[in-house]
Length: 522
Image 1 (cartoon, rainbow, N blue to C red):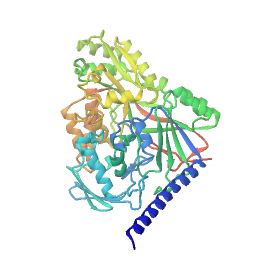
Image 2 (image 1 turned 90 degrees about the vertical axis):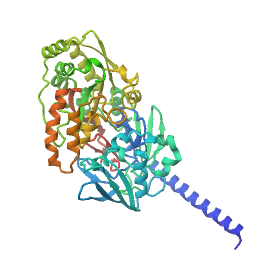
Image 3 (image 1 turned 30 degrees about the vertical axis):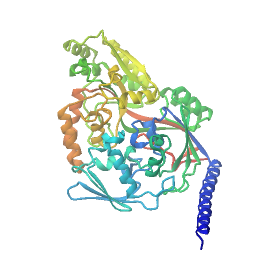
Image 4 (image 1 turned 90 degrees about the horizontal axis):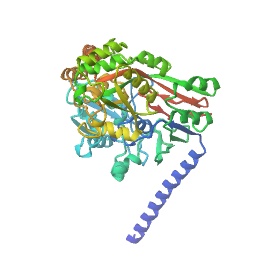
């Protein structure tokens, strides 16, 4: 047999295979085009669709339908397996062995294996990559080892209850190693995962389109595609839903709920989550380093009035840095609305009430965010405080807050920033926003707060796999944080979404994310 014949046949086979793949893709595209398409009105445009280098919920909201992780927090708030089939931990609580699901493929056709997981772990931990998830992963992982193609072993520095919850977060979803290597810096806009939908296109400022994954290991979705349409303005999102341009929207303004319900065309979804809405003080500012000043701002806020009149009952006044849905939550009734007490504390601290302060806020990203900010501005004015509410576009807000170190002039332009936060695991909910080693970019501690006793109690919460042993440090740390007042505490959030009645099977998680893998349209 001649070498020429062999080379010729090899070329023929290669072309045939390539054509087969192309035709399969074309057939699937044609099939998906004839299936129902769901349009979801995003309140803010994602920043990056690389789960290991994103910090914002809109990015994760899209990414969670592209990728899977080893675990996920389910609809009831419980930890459940996904790409991991089962797991075990050593007697000393530091060596974790995971058996992975077999037969799963990434959207680019490559296999999901233990090597793929190891690649992603090492990618995050490599300081040279400077990924956003590194600060979150670093305290929990010492080493990762491939036992065989579908068995992975991870060693943690100490026993910790938080490790499995880390693996259930969006930052632990698994991208395709081949795609990461192929696209490099462009991977954040060309994502490849194993999830129920694969990425098609991203038109900046307008929309992101995903198409169904016909080979999804949990079964192919019943809808052909999702279009995430970027609609930051609350009123525009509601109008798009009413006119039929979109099928589902988040953050439905409180004043529109009744009229949407009266039409009989829409389902209103109200779901408690793990989030606390707050303004973080910039505690690197000398005038905010006196605890009495921070407490004064908290006494100036009428939380109950905001919940009743701005949120129209869609929230609960916050009395802890943890939500009522968290394991170990403690109610700390300290900050009643007391303007006289606020003025007294400001006088005692010699606070200059002529100083103009700036709070960076968003519009449409969080529930009634601008409206809450304006209500707070008025309440602070009543005790003599002058606060400018500065509304920022979402991507600029993310860069200024979570990707900017405290020494940067951009960070020092703000006295407060408005956000909400919450994770299913209470240890990480506290560590991420209140530990001294979680300042941006290593976490979400936007207040640049540092308290050794808070750090110590957070470590006690995390350094056990026994949930009951967490209760004592949880009970002690919450009153301490309320007393220290690194935030102006506002309310516990509820998710408020609306969808067409013809859309069913959508899963809204208590972590805020919306899953479309089991959705269908009539």
